[in-house]
Image (cartoon, rainbow, N blue to C red; front, side):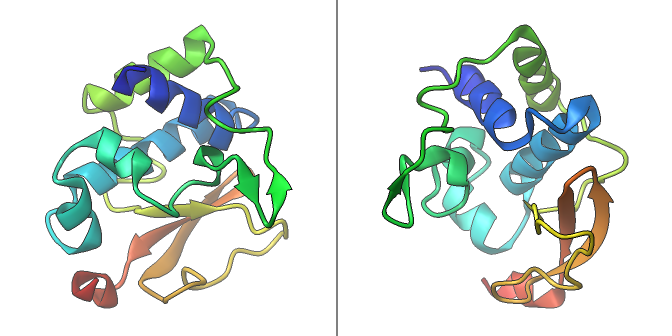
Length: 146
């Protein structure tokens, strides 16, 4: 599977129900990680979007089992539609969702009307914006130490 197709599948899986703005925002996060000049994503991704997508424990959509249960909504079973391929091409070509910006490195669905102030796992990100059901986080100074 090409990087383009894998990226399009990830966009569909992670944000397919979030409209075009939500899908572009998620794609922007992936590319922001690929372009990160320091920290974990620079070391692990080394500028390669595919390495970012395939990095362990980053995207639920790459897992076939979550919490011991079969996870059927994953990149291996969802086929991208033309819109997902177009957004992958846009992001790979340098597109940045202006509402998310060039710094957002994480997103999550809190399944709540409120976004947490910090990225919930290690406080390396602070809440920046919400687009539909997803909260987006920019890096704090702690991220540089990752």
